[in-house]
Image (cartoon, rainbow, N blue to C red; front, top):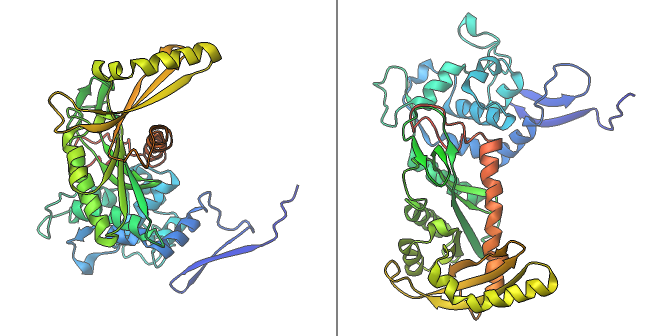
Length: 394
């Protein structure tokens, strides 16, 4: 059956003096045509261009065929297409569409200087590999690796892109934090066995606001999940407040981040927090009456039941003050299932069920963002021997 198309050609942003169009006439065919839509987004948001500014280029300008922006664009767009390995670029360097996305003047590669590079518009695997493995302190004296990434600039870039994505200043933002395991199977630097995760792994830290990533920090796994989190969110909150001084900021995380240092920082810097808290004998004893109520409700209805209790709680040693804790006394088919949250949100404005069910439990959506990083953007490809060559964002 013949395909009926109401439009024969689609026009996109031009490439210098060249037109960029798609058609259905069976000419040069590609299975990655969706990349042109990414190029349209880049034309409006300049995300790749801003990211490229996070690199310092110490090469001789008279000997350059690929700019940093073109190299970064080539790598980023290929990742979006599903090509996670640098080795893939030995074939992709001939791809005219990827060359268009990367911004090459001649996507056919006929303008290359050396005869052996003709019809290969893009950089090969070795050039990209040198860029990714360049030491941070590299300068013009290094023989081969001369494109160094500025880690602090990348940190600011992620937050800046987040701010730019808002047409108006939001009234409130919620930052979600979580650590996840990234299993490794070799002798990589920083390789440790993690008892909770049950394997040798890294323990990257992620911070999101909704769908947008604000921090991806690769870490060794012989640490507490919360290590370095205060420094990261203090940096992020500070940068956001430079642009949005009046925005209300909440921080949300599981019990792995329920630490005195974090809660105290939030209280001193006017940031609200909603944190899970690990159950213990004292907390469970505080909601025994509610657990009994939930058990009776479960027996009467045959369905899961829950009763909430709002109370003040302070640890014997680790907390400097008493804080608001919400206990959920749940009874399921398998028995009791108590859960606890500590929060700075005022009880007169946010009741216990709302805090737990509508605010805290919504943090589960962050798990999907982490899956997208690892499954769609290959953030779990950490097979290189050094930590520096294994960035958590792929």
